[in-house]
Image (cartoon, rainbow, N blue to C red):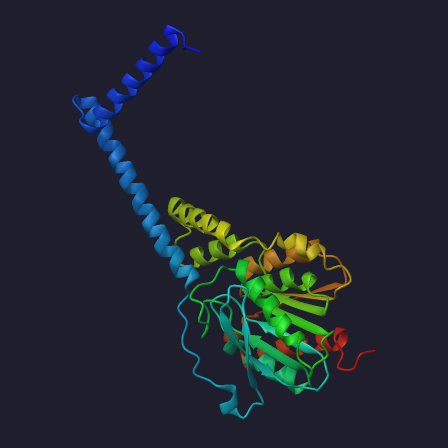
Length: 328
């Protein structure tokens, strides 16, 4: 069917107008056009600069600089075994297994963001001293992990599930009774993974956040970028775009809603007030049984000796109540 003549004229007119506009942008002939082209070029350059700077800031958050692990638990005469396991992406991670009571329950400890398993070594040995089998490892992008970047919770949930699978395959523990503890990043992974693994019988989380985007925002504020709204927004948008490729572990609140009947200990510290507020929000939405404990500080890397002892006693007593050494 032949298009009406007026329609063909309109199409030709539109093409001519677009051609003139593009030509004017490339070779401006009027003062107004030159100013418009200059403004557009400046805006485009500014936008590209924001993308580059935002990407630089984002890379600093996703590839946190970590000091090498200078301490080997075996050198401290601690009974420990190195255990390797493979992530869903085919990456090999190494964890420390601290044997306790043979055939007894096990507890997996998950470190926080910009931290490592070294920071929770004393908690691991304290639980081992109470005859728990303990396992801890470094998330991607932390400590000696061969994976070079963190996703602030997206892939870390799958890494924890892979660790649970390896632990549950051992014949020297009670494979049906496993406890989980996690701080910030670790806490996010713990609450996402717990309802997906029936062997998990007790969970303790400290300073947990609702969404990975919130952890990134907190990190940017600590770096002094939060007071630059446009730059901070660009960084968050770039992270949001990347998260499409990482998959979604689901809403943390949705995962928590599936933990009815699972004993949960929520811990907050005055040394991380924003995370403490988020933790209280998660606690409020969580089904029972649950309990909330507020402490002066909970960052294991900076606690004084008395604070560390109180914290470790809190965690140990929780597991003794809900993950007893002898099944009742």
